[in-house]
Image 1 (cartoon, helix red, strand yellow):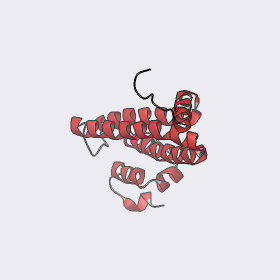
Image 2 (spheres, one colour; image 1 turned 180 degrees about the horizontal axis):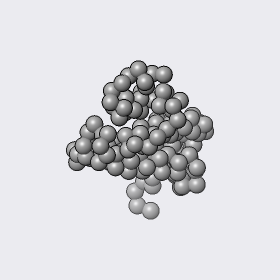
Image 3 (cartoon, helix red, strand yellow; image 1 turned 45 degrees about the vertical axis):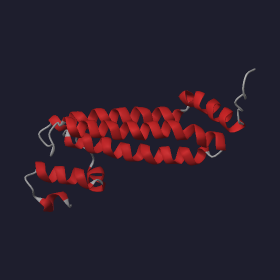
Length: 144
């Protein structure tokens, strides 16, 4: 043995063990699939007539980079929380992200013209604006 040997800390071993088991985690797979679906619907919605923004490579690349950074940070930090024993906090954060991405997907489908129940439209202002736009701008009808 020439030179000093690197010391392996228990925290690093726990991190790598948690990272290797990440593919078995349901929350990780759920957010990964949700991010992919959001990227897909976010791109497709721009070709529909109700879209306020047309398909743009600059906006598309920005969205892909943003989503990749969120996914990469989540994939890097989640095993760390598992090694620290606070994976419930990470699970709560992933559920929070899944909710926001879910809203984004619903909004994307709304731009594509998918009809939703009135209570969903009422809860999501963007869909209400789209309904108003499609109805010719009669705001009194959409507020009922």
